[in-house]
Image 1 (cartoon, one colour):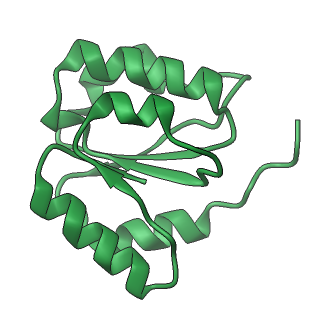
Image 2 (cartoon, rainbow, N blue to C red):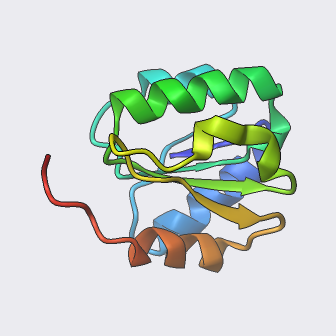
Image 3 (cartoon, rainbow, N blue to C red):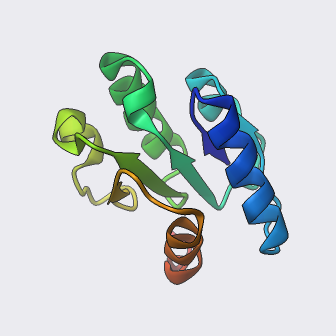
Length: 119
């Protein structure tokens, strides 16, 4: 799933992922992240495009609800995400990439992360 407020970014990444053999979905609404239908193997989120407090709340809730889903965050200021991205024993730590990140970098990050063993 691609989550960002820029419609062109969401559309372009979805198209690139589809060409690469993935089955992407996308949204411009942060709250859709919390209600996405399973399965959801990975999420690419552009947190800088949303209100900081909303992103923090969404990330904490998402990691609690889907601890084995890979979160790839593309941000120019990840330090603002604080505790929402810190490693914990309950979920995978998000992968944070500096902005800008190109489609092939995101695809490599998604494909290069092994799925964890079942809990």
